[in-house]
Every structure is written in C-alpha cells, then in structure tokens.
Amino acid sequence: MSATTHRTERGSPGDDQVAGYLQAAAGLAAALALAALVLPGAAGRAAAWAMVATLIAVPFLRVAWLAVRWAHPPDWRFFAAAVGLLALPAVGALVAALT
Amino acid sequence: MLLEHLGLAALGLLTACIGAVGGLGGAVILVPILVFTGKSITEAAPLGLVSVAAGSLAAGAFQLREHTVNHRLGVTTETAATLGALTGALVSGVVSEALLKWVLGLVAISTAVVGGRRKGVRNLPDPALGPDDVGEEPGALAGAYPLRAAVVPYRARHLGAGLGMMGVAGLVAGLAGTSGGFLKTPAMSEVMRVPVKVAAATTTFTVGITSAAALIVLAVQGRISPVPAAAVALGSLIGAQVGAQLQGRLSPPLVRRSLSAALVVIGLVLIVTA
Image (tube, rainbow over all chains, first blue to last red; front, top):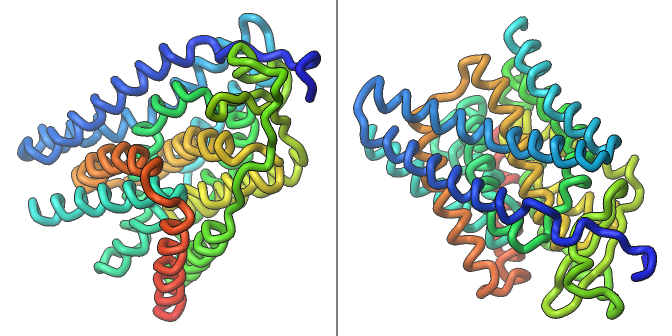
C-alpha cells in the first residue's frame, strides 16, 4: 500500500467522543458493582443486574454507533455486517428461550 | 458470603491485571482457578465472561484514543465469532463437565503455546505517511496506525481462514467462558497479517461483543449469579486498567513466558482431573 493510494478516515471520526462515553460506562459499571456488594438483599441484586446489563449493552451500543457511522457516508458492506452482528444476539436469546 | 465476594473481586482484579499485562485475557486464568477452588465449570464460565466484558470495557477508551482499533475488521470477524459464541453458550449447559474440563485444559495449554511464541512487529512504517493518514480505510479491511513517531499502513489478508478461526474462538468462548482472545489476536496477526498492536486492540473490542452475546444467552437460561458477577466485574474493571498501565513498564516476553508455564500446569491438571 503506497501513500498515493492510501485513503483513511483521518483519525476515525468520533473515536475520542466514544472513548469518553466508554470511560463513563466503565465508571457506571464499577459504581453499580460496588453498590451490589454493599447494598443488602433485593437492592444489591438489582444493582448487580444493572451492572450485568451495562456490560452487555455497551458493546452493542458501540456496534450500533458504527452502523450509523457507516450509513453516512455510506459504506454499505460494513453497515450490513454491523446490522447482522446486532441481530445475532437477538436470535441467540430467542433460541435460548425456546430450548 | 462477604468474604467469598471479596475473594472473587480480588481474583478478578489479579487475573484481569495479569491477563492485560500478558495480552492473553484474564478469563483464561480466572476460570481454571475458580474450578480449582471448587466451582463447577458451568458456574465459573459466566463469571469468566463477565470478567472478559469488564476488561474489554475498561480498556476500550484507552485503545480508541490510541487509534489502534480497526472497527471494520472487528465487526467483520466478530460475526463469525459471535455465531460460534452463541452456539457454544447454547450447548454448554448440556455438555458434560468432563468434556468442558478437557476443553478448558486444552484452551489453557493452547494459550500457553500461542502466548509463548507470539512475534513482534511485521508491518513496517511508511515514511511517506503522516499523522493525518492514521485511521481506517473506508470500504476495506485496511488502515494505518501510529507507531512512535511513524505511521504504519496495513491490509488484512486471508479473510476466509481468519473468519474460520474466529468462529472457533467464539465457540471456545461460549463453551468454556474464556475470551477466545488468545485465538483471535494470533488469527488476526499471523493469519490475516494485521500488525499485532492493531490485532490486540481490535480483539479487546471484539471480545466484549462475544462475551456480551454469550452473557445474553446465559442470562435467559438463568445461569448468571448477579452478586458474584458484580464482585468479579469490579475487580476486573480495576485490574484491566492497572494491567494496561503496567504493560508498558514490564518486559512482555518475560511475563508471557511465566504465564505460559503457569497455564500449562493448570491445563494439565484440568485434563488429568477430567
């Protein structure tokens, strides 16, 4: 790959902003985990489930952000891959619920 | 109970830290230790996946700011890995404990071999490229990343073989509760010819998705114990950040060799006791 044919997105737009969101999400997950250990009974369990939900949601929100990014300007092959990736866990959850 | 949770948090911290320093992922150490200490693999696997998801989240911001993650490569390869992880998570509840011990033992030994043999930089900097060229190439599995003052271009190759290995990595993740990162990083680096730094950062991003997908299935099946999971996550969130900081100060080959020796022992014991 030579410099003349090299064409990048110049720093991958939005990366710094998303990095900030990820840092905030990590802080939230840590706070919820701590609450789960400190709070008694149902409150502790609720905090623990919220922490698990955060850990599950963040990677898929990041993929959803990528899908939006690849829709404008269009990069359809990777947009389709991102949408497909978002659909897979839903299929898995459905199969798990049915079996 | 409190002591058990504190112990899990400490274990999560220690294994995530060691995993981040060695670049192998913490769950591959955490899950065998949990099995040693009396938990069944079906109990330990969800905790391993929580540890992976937490470690991926903790390292994500740092790696995005470094501009070493290739999202197009990650999303493309992750479709195969997630499919494998979902299959692994779905069948892990009906697979025998002995078989899972075998899988985990082989996973630990494979990790030891791959980690001990990992190579350095293959792609060379292009002096014609500057900081403005850093990023992903639209429409392709290619890009350029910063390496000290230089910029290194790269392009992924052998996509079919890479996707096959990602599927296997996902299957192992869903089955044994490890990240599969020990297979993903070498698959990207050695098979797809992506620079190891980009491969490791992209893998850290993708293992978060693999583990989240498997955790959805385990949550639906009612196999996640929320409070122990919180203890492991808290430790892993801290441990992964500490490990990422330590990585630059310690000698990675030395750490990887020590880890490899420990993993071989763990793997052999698991296989013998299976």
